[in-house]
Image 1 (cartoon, rainbow, N blue to C red):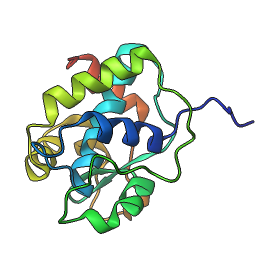
Image 2 (cartoon, rainbow, N blue to C red):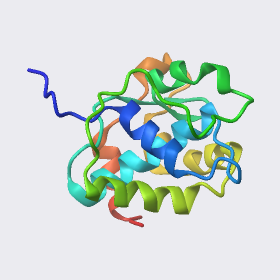
Image 3 (cartoon, helix red, strand yellow):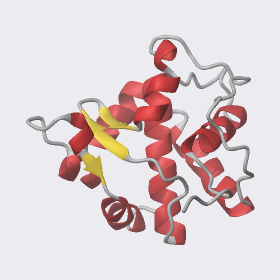
Image 4 (spheres, one colour):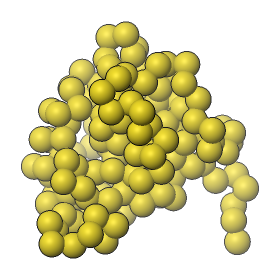
Length: 156
């Protein structure tokens, strides 16, 4: 049964884009995927729940959420404008708790470039455990358990 109040990854992406100074910190397709990985990880570690239901996959250049990758396909080299609105958003409101965690992630990780975040994620347990170059990327799932295990020890 579908929860009509369920936040989806597009809701989180919309908030993330609207709250980030995109003139100062350029957000590309690669970078938004890494930021969403950090948001989900910190949210799970701090609340014991997932913020959004979409799977995070371990790709060659780090964590990726397929729906987000597809949504921002045209922003591989160009920054996402801060007035961009994802069409797939549920329009459900993020909780105050969720916004606080997202804001902390924005403050901590936005100063890093997409490439720096990619390198950083490769050094972390969730990507290391999930990534297998011999498997198709769809099968390299970063589980909620891996996220919780790693981020509980790295809370912001």
